[in-house]
Amino acid sequence: MIRGLAIAEIVAAVLVVALAILCWNAGVTETVFVAAGDSGPEYVSTRYAGPWIALGAVSVVLAGLLLIDGVRRLLRPPLHTR
Image (cartoon, rainbow, N blue to C red; front, side):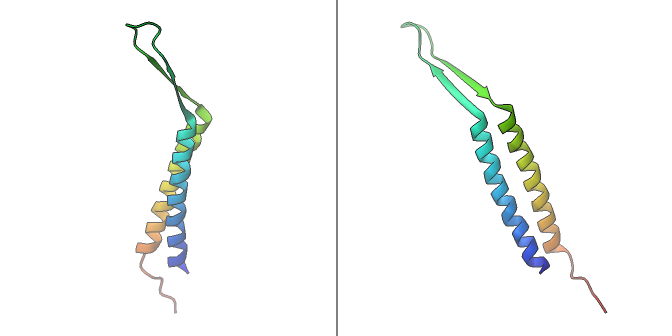
């Protein structure tokens, strides 16, 4: 039972990391402006959307906690009951 829960937590941590990557990618938008003249460089503007970046950061923290607890459950010696 405990081993199954530990594996479930580790799998959930991997899924939450995937969610964090999706949120981060949704929060970063790049816009490329072409050069104004023949000698001018192009301009790349990067916009960061705070709520998406924050959700990505919270997801990473949650995944870390799930991973730590899952590994702890796997490595803990079995409880002895009488």
